[in-house]
Length: 113
Length: 115
Picture 1 (cartoon, each protein chain N blue to C red):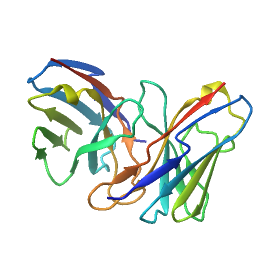
Picture 2: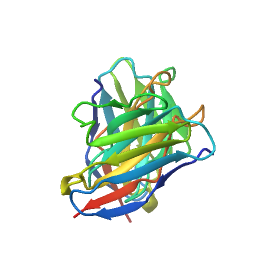
Picture 3: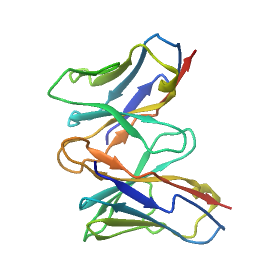
Picture 4: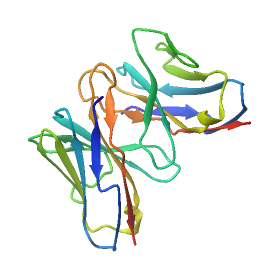
């Protein structure tokens, strides 16, 4: 089955700096790559996603890049703010079919004022 | 946007009892729903896929006789943790496939504590 590896497990950056989280996956059939932000005790919140027909997508301070050949994708957060502190999860899935998601291990991001 | 609800939001029970968790799609129909389990400081692990009108599909290592899933209608799936033990204490989250805007709609989760 699919295996998703996420790094780093913890990340601490100064407010205003950029944060990058990386994921690799194994199943070449995966064509949907979402990123979720989860605050303690809450449901995962979709912050950005990318489909396999594009290599990059940006939404204000958040961007995701995808390299399908190398089977890795990354989350980039620029101009970080204290409210960006949370746990972030990457995931992989397929748009068609079962649509189940396989999650990475998570990254605890801390933004230091 | 589409909403998925869960009930209860939290439950405390004694070891050996059974607990039922409901997952509802409030404004759309879902022939498929997913059940995830999340232990503290860990990731979401898919437990099973709930299929309306047919048997659930369980992930490897998940005991189907312990985690009973029923998808009785197009808007409701239930997960019953039978003979719960302290190691079953976890955060249980359901989801339903979305549309073009968002691939998965997650419920708010149910925190289970087994004493």
